[in-house]
Image 1 (spheres, rainbow, N blue to C red):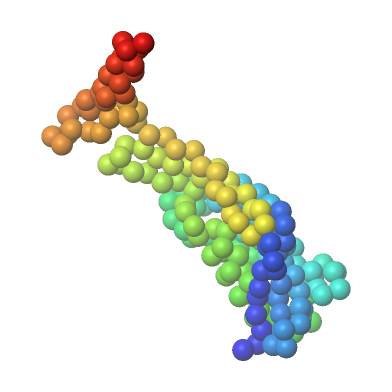
Image 2: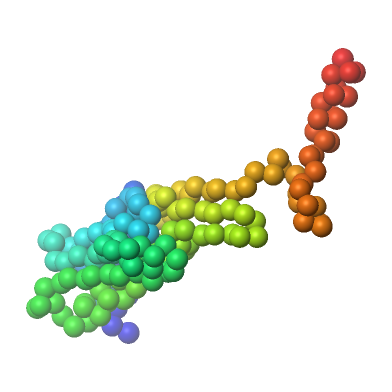
Length: 177
């Protein structure tokens, strides 16, 4: 083992934070990110600071730059990242930073795609953003579904029948008054 990457208690508050520890458990660097990740289509920048608090690098999730990138981001979980750190950084710390990049990808960008289609349910879902709060990720999505009046479809595939039970119950209550 060359070290570990850990999220502190409450995850850094409203900005995600991961601490990079050496083999002895001492913090060597910290990686912090934005509180809101606007879709998988946009980029995100995570700053890397050494144990003293000096900026020593970045981990960037690259956003869409072409229609090919748009199609890849919208339909798959493939992502592009860029990592920078000083040349004189110890090899162990560089390896831990690359491991941190993989952890960031898994934590923030692998949950669900930016766009999902459900042809059988005749709907789609767009991921607008993820909001980070005290170690939790709250996804904000927009669901587009064909409105069938709340009734289940018929087994033969025909149009749904309206659900009359709530209407009948309301009519009975009004009649009894």
